[in-house]
Length: 193
View 1 (spheres, rainbow, N blue to C red):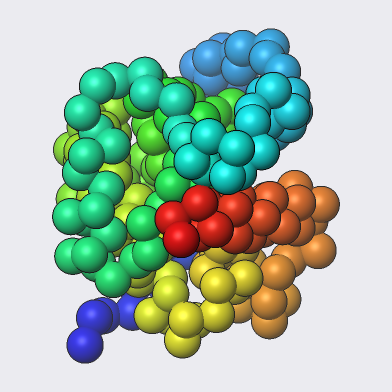
View 2: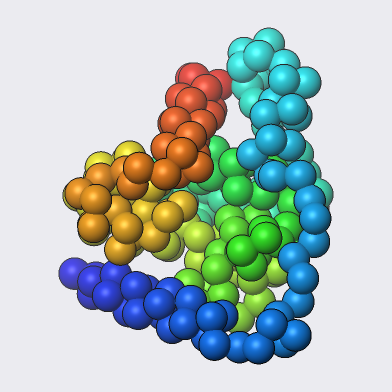
């Protein structure tokens, strides 16, 4: 039985939030002005062939070799490979050096506190990032008894928010995130059959 770490994750998230509020403004780096990732993803998705047209949707390879680790890690943590690929696609588009405006890093966009909790020393190492992200998906799936919508909502917004709202929080970003991943997951699953 895996320990329930959601309380620790909530506390770490709250500590990070408080630290951001009490630091003087000059210490905080200005976030880069960038197009939102979900907008870039939608634009790029429109350019992709339909699933089945060329053997299914494929994540672009930015760093050679990391994709070959997905089957082994997905099997180790009991997470469907197609789901892992959908999360990677939504989170980073397959870019191993991706950083969100909130500070999430790598292929599966791990927050610093989450990465540390999962034992990921270098979130930009694609194999460490994959293992941490897949392990986290597995922990969330266990916490929510396999409820995929709650699992994905918690991956995006945090388990504390999912618990507080009893399901997908009423945030447009999280609701769109869950719908988009479920759609990608379904298409990835169809491409495998």
